Length: 173
Image 1 (cartoon, rainbow, N blue to C red):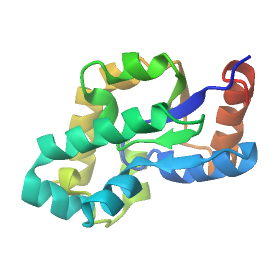
Image 2 (cartoon, rainbow, N blue to C red):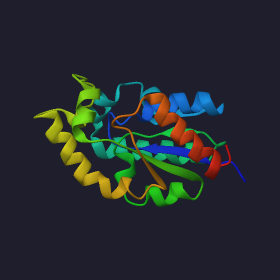
Image 3 (tube, helix red, strand yellow):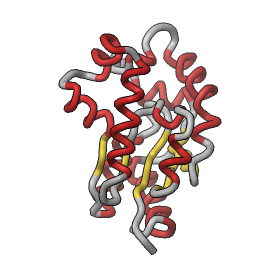
């Protein structure tokens, strides 16, 4: 079986970054943190980038970064929470990647995020309500992933182990 990328999708707080780091270490795979790439390329934090250039410009940079990552050697790819909700991106990624949705309830996500003020698209109003709104809007896209791993009551290690098993069985790792 030819090795394929593993792309983790889900809302902020679902564990994409920490699970991605653990998964990459467990599989001996490179990790592509898409937000990190964008921060380095734009030379500014995501919150400032969105504030200055808008969400549409940020999403275009995100699409380009994921497209570039998918064109390179197989890796664990962690895009931002809104990437999967852009038309057509999941279908394009599926041609070279295994997509895994890390799913959690809004209340769990809010507890994990705490008072993190670095997420501009979650600012303003009640965090649980904002997360519920995003979940409602993005769930139809996230659910198109090849697999869903519920993360609410699992440790990072357990979620990474579940995803690693899928990667070994279906993505050649």
